[in-house]
Length: 327
Image 1 (cartoon, one colour):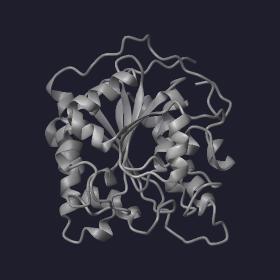
Image 2 (tube, helix red, strand yellow):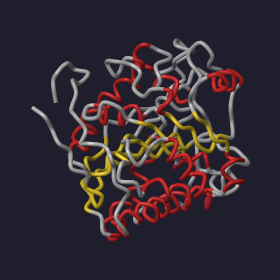
Image 3 (cartoon, one colour):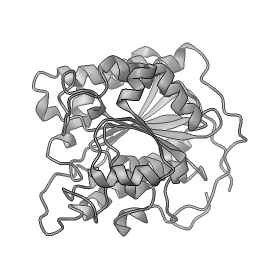
């Protein structure tokens, strides 16, 4: 049976993905609870959104897993994605904007998989300091969070590459990396020959964050194609926001990130976004959580101020799901 999804710009579907299994250190599994405690739901409701809370998935925890040095904690990571996937499918079907509170970067695979249940193609805007294009063959750490985008485009451990039954989950030309400031040599080599468009943090600053984000969205065909946003908070310079797993100096300032995010999230064709890498263990006074809540509420509220940009494409046609059933 065909399913027509009617987009609801004033509705948000909230899902928590409390995990650090793919991360470089523990702590990110506490992020969803910390953001809830900082008043995220109430602030969104007060701004005028109707929020449906789908709760939190079962927590998944960091471990060294020295038995699998090239792809650590892979079994636990896949289990976490299997928890997240059905929640995102329901949330996407509702037409609300799906907001996944990570954890870690790998949770975007669950969001993308839920979106692909209903959309044949999904584009991806990767707003991150890191490209995360290592694979088990090139990784310096074995941490899956340094390999997430590689798996999304079909390169890496089979258990993740085939989490969506017909890889790639997103095609390389349909990915734009935005805000890059840290690359490993194998990632640099890959980007030099791959069709993934990438925008460095220095280019964002030179052009202006709003203009650079608008240009990235145009390249992504955001006015006519559905897309997902991955927001890794380590894209913010550690001088302004140190409460992430692997902070870095330089990169984008908080105001740059706010300006770019505001430009991105106002688009009607944004199906969902995930927020990753906030580590409450590095935020003893809760100031970081409050900054994230402010950032999300301020930027998302632009969806309420004026009509979101409309798609020029026909309504999406359902496809066969990875489980082999027709939606």
